[in-house]
View 1 (tube, rainbow, N blue to C red):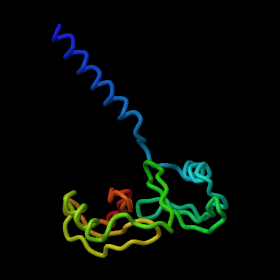
View 2 (tube, one colour):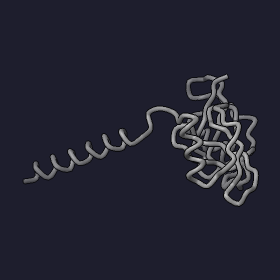
View 3 (spheres, rainbow, N blue to C red):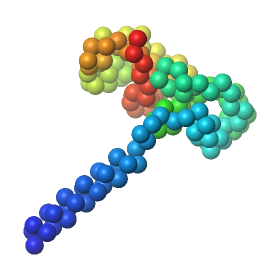
View 4 (tube, helix red, strand yellow):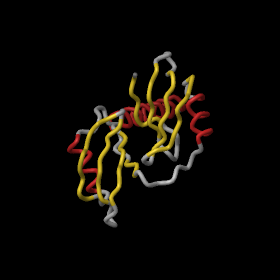
Length: 144
């Protein structure tokens, strides 16, 4: 009986992990998907959509009609409007990058709704990073 319960639990975990992997996007979003994501969230007059510095960028109008620059996570499509307040301080960003194995963190600044930083990644390569303003998660990375 115990073997059956353990086997069932292991099978459930394996199935859940396989589902989570299949649900995660395998490829970065396309320009068409970026435009669709912005439209779904109420943005209009979407222009200058381009992939740059590891994230999608666009000019658009908010649902209230205000002109806004937006950034999107290339994998998840999370939208970061340029006119939002960061939940993290520069010290928080530096600490999170350090904890993630980045060294020589410098040029940390908050611009257009996301944190930007330059650092050496855990492999020692110089990278430019884009970070979520609320969580500090790296949403874009470009190697120099």
